[in-house]
Length: 167
Image 1 (tube, rainbow, N blue to C red):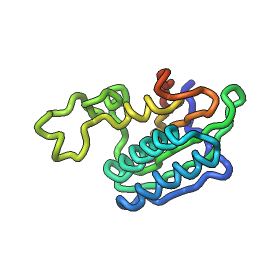
Image 2: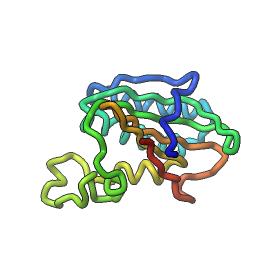
Image 3: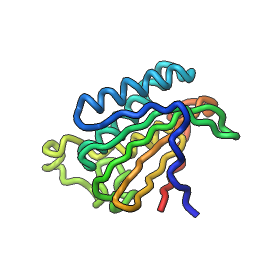
């Protein structure tokens, strides 16, 4: 059975994602939460990239939504941070394709269209590379894209994330 979206962690901060300023607030808030949990400056920067990607996707594809960031604890992995973007935009048609750099959820991007779409199609792949766990939960016209990174497991760059998705 696929894992469902984890519940909002106690102490999580929520941000409205309505415009670019909302995306900025998400990245700034993520840096602050990560630093307060003990992540080093490089990890805080990587988590800010993850926050920017998740919030930007909620804005562009979901026409806005809500972004949560907060502590998470796993019995085996210890303390970490959880980031989640929730929107009511269209579902991700093919998550495996969307996670390939240079692609969207329908496959490879046409290089002639890359500049007009304000993105190169590398965002979800970056999220997976910079975190330890990643998931997408889509149901009832709502989508939650989330990621977790833990203090104890070292740099996200030294191992692959474990992607999985909810129903």
